Image 1 (tube, rainbow, N blue to C red):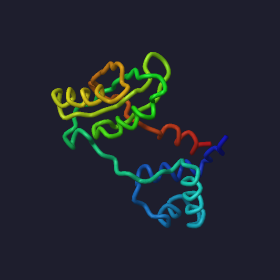
Image 2: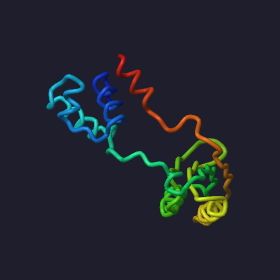
Image 3: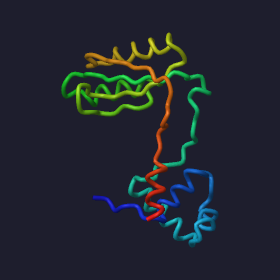
Length: 157
């Protein structure tokens, strides 16, 4: 089992979540710790796979992909790797999760409009070993992807 985050780790991650372009020295100043402490923490968080990088937050709708849909895929048994590889070749597929329950894979995809979504769904259904799919269009995102509440709880401990 991996070592849990402590309050300083959480505060550092919150700081970088809010301002991902901050340098190590500025992080140290804002957190009231030594520069070496911040660098050591960042190195450890990266080694443990907790911190994977600093990608920019992108608004897909502003980029022209205003439609988000989710699909539950049923696939041929034992073919998850092949299906995942085929799905990763579809640019509009943003995430794929292996799941329990009725379906085998849960896919988040984006499209420009309904016609474009039909094209994307056709590509997904055309992937080898996909047997059946059920697609739902997202109307809104009342709770966007987040980790802040978890980090805030850890920062208070």
